[in-house]
Every structure is written in structure tokens, then in C-alpha cells.
Image 1 (spheres, rainbow, N blue to C red):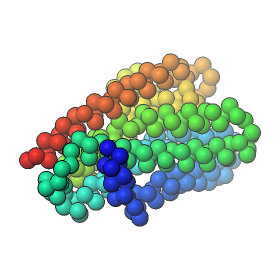
Image 2 (tube, helix red, strand yellow; image 1 turned 45 degrees about the horizontal axis):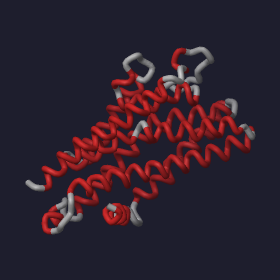
Image 3 (tube, rainbow, N blue to C red; image 1 turned 45 degrees about the vertical axis):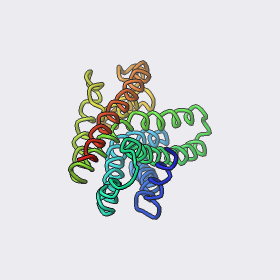
Image 4 (spheres, rainbow, N blue to C red; image 1 turned 90 degrees about the horizontal axis):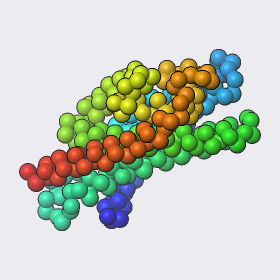
Length: 248
């Protein structure tokens, strides 16, 4: 399995995909700083803005874009036709593709966390907020990785438009459903909903007041468990499809 992961990772060498994982967090942080400067808001609004826009836009769109770029590279290399003449296990190949994309999203989250941590610490020196930053970053990542197999499946089956289109539709639907009682039924709403008790930000981007019903922290563990189960299910279903597709 290590060889599969190393081989998949090499495909990203000197590609735009690796640039995305650095450029995206820096863009959102710069956007938050410029917005704060124009609005004259307090420093704590910086964290609220970052952890509202990050799960709302980058995690769905960024994941779909990485999946689409991964598939585009395979199409240029022969669209998996060469694998038929080699002893390559389809499920391991599919697992490695999903794992590398998830790893890149994790690295991007670490970069975001590090820069937000630095800014927050220099401004306030508050270690409690630093712990919240770490928690928010990791929770967003965990509750978003289950969508990677779906994006990769759509990109492989129908192409980039389908993958990114799904992300855009999910983005809009997730933002609408996140504050609703049925939010758990919409995977795109999970990271947004969990930012309510963690970052104290409403899915619409408005800071939440103490006592708001959305601030209930009991949903965090439940959603993380559901996200892990969802990841397992989406990976298994898409890997079965990919395996059958290979033997056609």
C-alpha cells in the first residue's frame, strides 16, 4: 500500500494541486484581514470570518477541484487503460487517490491553523482561542473528507463539471440546511453546523450570542461519528464501482 501512496503522491509533483493547498488558506486569511480593515471590526471577528468561509467555500470547492485535477491527470495518461496490463489492485489504487487528496486537504488545514494561530496569539496571547483554532480546523477537515470519494467518483465518471457542480449545489444546500433541525441529513452542512458551538459563528456568518440553541456542543461528537461512518460508506461504494469499471 505504501508504494501506491508514494506513486500517487508523485503524480502531484510540480502541479497546480500542490499550490492550491498553500494558496487557498493564505487567500482566505488575507480576505478576512482586508474585510476587517474595511469594516473596522474587532480582532475576534477574524476567527469568525475564517472559520465560516473556510468550510463554506474551500472545503467543498477545494476538494472537488483536487479530485477533478487528479482525474484529469489520469485521463491524459490513458484513462487507466494501462493498468489492465499490470498487476494493480483497483481498490488500493482508489484508496491511495482518496487518501492523498485527503492528506493535501489536511495539510491545507494545518497551514490555515498555523497562520490563524500566529495572528490570534500575537493579537491577544489567549491560549484558549488557540485551542479553539486547532479544534475548529480539525473538525472541519474530519467532517469534510467523506465527500472526497463522491467528488472523485463524479470526476472519474462524468468529468470536472459534474464534480465541481456537485460541490456548488452541496455548498448552497449545506448553508441553507445547517441551522435547521434536519442539518444532520446534509453532509455539506456538517462543518458549518459544528462551527456554531466551536467558533460561535452562525452558518450565515453572523456571530452567535451566548444561549443560542445552535451553541449546543453535544452535536460535535455525534457529527464526527456520523462523518466517519459516512466516509467508510462512500469509499466502499465508490471503490466497488471503480473496481467493476476497471474490469469492463
